[in-house]
Image (cartoon, rainbow, N blue to C red; front, side):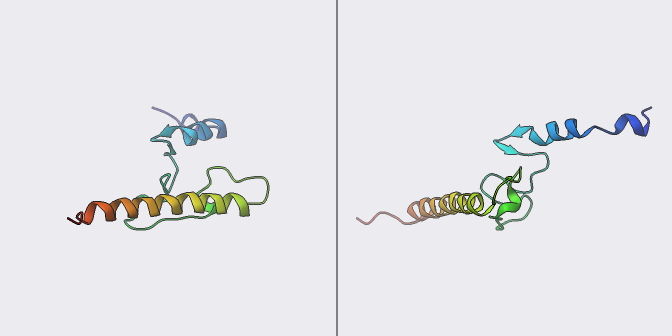
Length: 91
């Protein structure tokens, strides 16, 4: 039987668990997937600095804008490809 002391992990092992990659995302503790979709909530995306796995040591404005632009491009690409599949070709 394990004691409570044996089940406590140092910060280093928690960081290693957090960094374990699965499907290209920080999956252990991540609330969102790489496209900003909130896990377990249909139709909700988060596009701000709260999804950063590591907070930048400098101003967060530019990295936040870049992440938002990248996710917005992905959303537009998904919508464009969905429309092209739904609309039949004109004959």
